[in-house]
Image 1 (cartoon, rainbow, N blue to C red):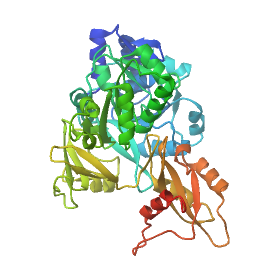
Image 2 (image 1 turned 135 degrees about the vertical axis):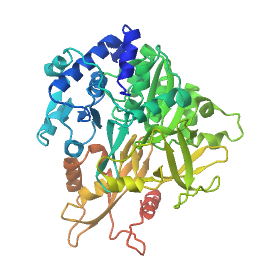
Image 3 (image 1 turned 90 degrees about the vertical axis):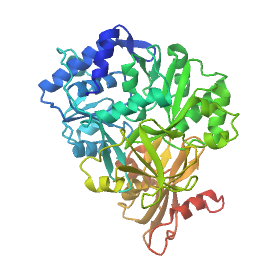
Image 4 (image 1 turned 30 degrees about the vertical axis):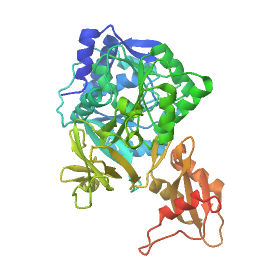
Length: 506
């Protein structure tokens, strides 16, 4: 089934319900939401967009993002949401790799992207975009559960992004698991999009559409703690997805101003490690409003969940261990911790986390080699190391892929290293994460320069600014005579992280 059918059904019985908000202002009810999305779909079809084609979105959060997303689906095409924080060069590569026929843009990034890619653009702030939504509406193109709905690009250790094929069936499974395992949704609720709609926050849009809830996009288009607290009070009850670093900032802002989060119904947190002290303080200040989820792009938002009651519980004898976990398997998946031969390890024994079920991807976009490495005998190998208790609570132990998580965004060291190695003075480089009190981690580059040269931080920083997104660039450069390596020549990143923990050497 085409996921856009949920919008059609909600609008048929509740078309006068308020749907899309820009800050406190309602800009569309469900009837208008449906008509604009269906009108846009008809215009896309008239311009040659066919079922199965890819249409990209390279824009910060905005209310008409959902109109464009559902218009793409109604036309039978697949959306390619691109993180608005990416460098235009990175976005251009995604457009090329996905074979996108069209890209919706907004802001300055669109102008730069136009010099790097020949893919036709539509500025979502233009009169042309407004005109596209006014056409006679079309009915949703039939789609099967295995048809592509969302092509999500997540970087890998190879340094190039991989396109995760998210199908209509995967989105349906994730959506239906939400009210069972995460939180209930009613027409009086509101989804607040403070985190990027191109990622987990947007994955939760369909279930809120199906239930006829409101969709509130901050005027800032992003996460500002004071704005979130204001909107919650004005538009509550609101639910939102936040990365742990965002939740930390929200707690700090609320405690500093004496605000208790009136209007916040639920905060779903995930996408990075949540420190026990941080979530304990958040619950103590805001009360029982928090649910933790664990997922990956390859199984979006749907591996495990730790319920509101479990997050807030302080009476259970194992409450600290449970709060330090990521919860238990969601209803639509099986979760196992296995050894390299895919054999389950004993309870509380570290191993690789594997998952299978309806929300698991069928594979990467045009990348059979990466697919074969990640999908084994029906299991998705997450690359994360964890341990599973006898009563089913999963605790993350380490990230085997060396990903750095800063401000809720994944940064893959290989991407940064490959850019730095293009500088003629750089002989070797290794990038690791250093703990940061506000962002979770920050990027640090250990650099070995060529004989007769010295580390030029300004030049390296300029190189990174020109080639990759700003949030990925190193915040510190450390000159070293050589990188620590094992007998096989592999750089020992654990040693480098240890140096950063030592105040004398770091």
